[in-house]
Length: 225
Image (cartoon, rainbow, N blue to C red; front, side, top):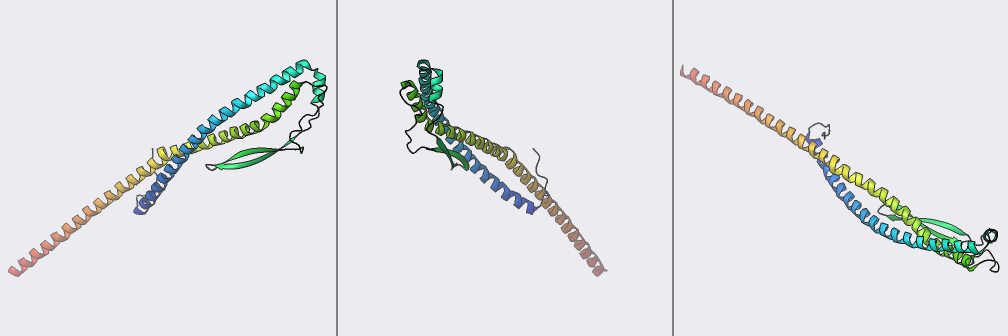
């Protein structure tokens, strides 16, 4: 890994140390967020699986009722009975925030005033199995909307989890080591410069002392003569 290309000055050293502190703090926060997202995702996956099993069970019962109804009723009569639905729904979409992720929340309102008014046909020419199928569809709708919302929530949290994981890895294995390496390099260079300055100062001191000794010796010789 290459260090940052900066001049080895004390100002840059101070700046990089502050950046390292910020990076370490950000790394800790990102790790905490990643762990919380993972915990929430696993819990959501369990809820999602349970709800999916319930929805599939209800839909299987609805399909069975439709199959029996189609066996005891003619195709034409069934199509005519279901041709003009009596009840409709208006989908309502909201959202909630989970760990900075805005996930959808689905709801609905029936278009007819009476929510239980769901049969678009008379009961004289239809079978009870068709009634059960229509009732089952009406009952499973809220669970299907909840399942759709939870699956979308799981997908969005998974995407945020992956993004957070990449950021954690980038800080842990790239940014922080790079800053540490650069700081170590600058400190080494500053120490080398400090030792060089001390060596030069010692040499200058030795030269001044030598000159003083020479001057003193010459002065003593002149006094003796």
